[in-house]
Every structure is written in structure tokens, then in C-alpha cells.
Length: 276
Length: 338
Image (tube, rainbow over all chains, first blue to last red; front, side):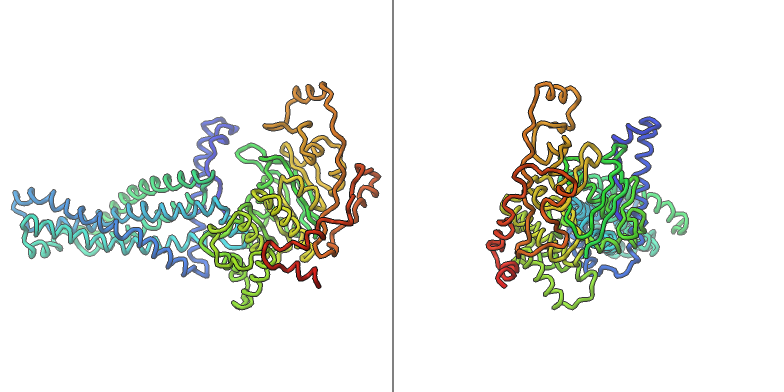
């Protein structure tokens, strides 16, 4: 199934109901197209045969561009939390709870957010640029003419790959982030290793990790879907591909933060928190 | 055997602006047709509409008893198997080498063994003169080679309808001549229905059985080659003879003032040039769709311009046969020799 055209300002101004209605209609058209694309992608996920080779290649590719930056971002993240809390907690005499704070911050929020930023920035931009250049070179048209649905063939494996890598990446970020916090707390600030580890369970609990992984999975899917949609609707030559990549990253970032807020709010409603 | 494509009242617009409206034409089964038009008249859009990549606003495209714009997605993919399309830049998959590109449709749609696939791919690559370049990636070869590889891929499932999107753009005159000869020979071998979108006048004058002209958002004329080449209709005449005098201007169509000024200055249109002989298959045989030179003119009481159809005996096709091998071994040489 081909993807509908992007919004057309010229058509919006020329609309029968005047430019205001025109812009509204064109704007809605974009959401409609994107929604239709999401449905097509969803259907593509369940269509046989699933493109295992493409999936493995993509998963490998996405991990290769995202593991290093994710690790490098999460070390200072854990460290910053340790630094921020260090002096305050010492004044209150609650040093033994630094580990608890670190776990809470990293696993609940930092993990999924860092994962989201890296997946959107590294993986999303790569997916968008790849599909965009294929669109410009008419490869996607050729594929459709040869009787292959590009959504099933190219988009579905990318979505699954992005989701899997995001889940794994979240685990990595959590481990590296908490380790970074440990290092700064124990080695730099002279905290007690035992207290840091023992307080893990004070505020955090297993559902925190599960919710973090679910968030990461959703972020991975959103990044891949937006990037694919933007790539497949790129037009206007090489510059169009550049614009599409730019928009895809910006849109994904905004979506991820909004979705993150919603999921967190829901999470607090359905999972009872410790100490409440 | 080719399939007839019947287009009725096709209209397409982008954002409220019509690209072309009410296009009706029939691509006769097994014949070669050319669609001409000034740049930006939506020739490529027409091609993409014809294979269902774009949905028309109105109108029908009948292929057999199936109306393409109204087919379900599943049926559309089914009907598309009848088509082979050569895109402008070949549209090869950048991540695969030429061999895998050409083998791709076979691996996707047939259950042929790898050795059968190899035989078919070799045959098609040989046909377009690309033997020995199987391992190259699309990025490593010239535009002309990409086009030929794209053609090999388009032909690999033995399509009934072959569409060419500007097969001659960006090619030098010699390569264009080879491609044109190749088109004629392919039509002779496969009897498929061909549609070529181009604005190369030489191609339009010598290759097709039918010519159509898109101009000013409609189909100005569609018919047998001799009908258009002997036509006095201003637009057709201007375009097919690459003149400045006529209704087509630099930007778009000329406005009334300009046309009046042109008429007032008493521009004498040059006489119609002779109709050139049609390109012949290189093995000296006949295409099934081929009609005797001058037949349409005789049947319709039109006197062709003086000097038309001259040099039929030394048809360029036969001459080209001796040298036609794209620099590598070719099937044509052996066919001519036998």
C-alpha cells in the first residue's frame, strides 16, 4: 500500500472553504495518512513471511549505531544524580539512601529517556535516511511494481528490530547508569558500598524495571514508525531526504516525551508505590 | 502475447490543479506506443497512474476485464505481475549487486531453483549486454548500464506490458540508438505491449507503431505513427519537428498575443519533413505488430510528405545488427549469423 501525499500548502490556500478550512483539512489529512500508515504497518507485522534476514540486519545495524552512545550518555547520567544528591543527602544524614535514589532515577526515568533519545537520534535518523533515499531513487516504486509491499518488506522488520534493540538498550542503560552512580558515590564521594547496594530495594521495586522496559519498547516502535513514515513520504530530491530526517527526529523527540509522561502517569495509577 | 490497455476518461490532479484531464487511449496489444509531451506535462505521472502507484481522480484503466484503479490491493499486486517497468534511473536496489537485482523478482514470485534462476538471469543480462557485470553494485556503474540492468530486471518475469520511463534520458546518441534497437528486438521476441514515455524526437519518429502527445493538460492526439507524422495539427507538428513556431512556448503554452504576433509576422512554417522508415528488428525478420510503410497513409487518403519511407532497403536495424553487442558478446550476433 502506498503512502498518501504530504500536506500541500498550495492546495490548502486554494480550498473551496477558504484558507483556514483548507489548512485544517490538509493538517487533518496528514494525521489521517499517518494513522493509515500505522495500521498498514501493524498489518505488515503479522503478514507472512516475516523478513527474518532484514530484521537481523536491521537489529544488528541499530545496535551498532546506538550501543556506544547509549553507554556513554548513561555513565554521566548516573554520576550526575549521585553528585546532585550527594551533599544534600549527607547533610540530612541519609547517605545510605543514595543507592535508592539512583536506582529510582535511572531505572524509572533516565533509562527509557536515554534509550528514546538514542533510538530516535541514531536509529530513527538512519531508518528515515535509508527509506527516504530509496523513495527518491524510485526503489520503493520499483518494489511495488515488482509485487512486493514495501511496508511488509522493509518497515515491519525495522519496527520489530527497533523495538527489540530499545528493550535491550534500556537494560544496558540501567546497568551502566547505576554502575556510574555507584562509582561516583563510592569512589568519589566516599559512600559505603554496602549501603548503596542495600538501599536498592528501599524505594524501587521490580515493576519499575518492567515499566521501564515497556516504555522502551513503545519508544522503539514510535521511533521506527515515524522515521519510516517520514522516509517513505520524502520528496523533492536529496534535500527532501534531509528535511525528512530532520523532521522525523524532531517529531519523534516530542512524541516520546509526551508518551513518556502519559505512561508514567498511568503507571503511578495502577502500580502501588512503596511508602505510600 | 501482449495485452491491450484501454484508458478511459482518466483525470489526475495534484492539490486541486489538474495534471491532465479526460485522457482516453488504447494501447493496442503487442504494439509499441510512444507518449510524448513537453517537460512537466505529467508523462511520468501518467505512467505511474497506469501501474497503480498513483490513484486517478476519475476514469478507468482496463486491462482485460479488470479496472485497475478499482481493484483491491491484493488484485492490484496480482495485475502488476503483468507489468515490467523501466524507471528513469533504473531504480535498482542499491544494496544488491546486479545479479541479485535481476534475480529478485524470480526469487520473490517463483519457486525456481537457484540454477534455473541463474540461467534466466544470465539470459536477460546477456540480452541487455551486461554479461560479466553481475557482481557490480548499482553505485559502481554508469547511468546507461543502470538503465540496461533495470530493463533486464523488468523483463525477467516475461511481462505482457512493458513501460519505459524515458529510456533515452541521459544517454549519448549511440547508446540511445542501441536501446531503441533493443526495444524493437524485444518487441519482436516477446510480442508484449510497449509504452515508451520520452521527449526524444528521434525515438518518437523511428521506433513506435503509435504516437500520443500530451500537451496543455490533455491528450492532444493519439494514433498510428504515420497519422501523427503527417499531421498538420499545429501542436503535433511543432513538437514532432522540434520547431519554435507553434502554440508551445518556452514557459507553457504561448498566449494569444504572442500567437497573433507570430501569425502577423507571416512566419512560413517549413514543409513537413519526410516520414522516416521505421526501425526494423536486427535479425531482418518482422515484428507481429509491424505494418507496411505507408499503409495508413494509403488507407486514409493522406499523401505523405515527399521523400517519405525512403531507404527502406537499408533499414538501420539491419545495419546495426553487425555491430550490435554493447561491447560484449551478444545474442544478436549469433542470431544474425545463423
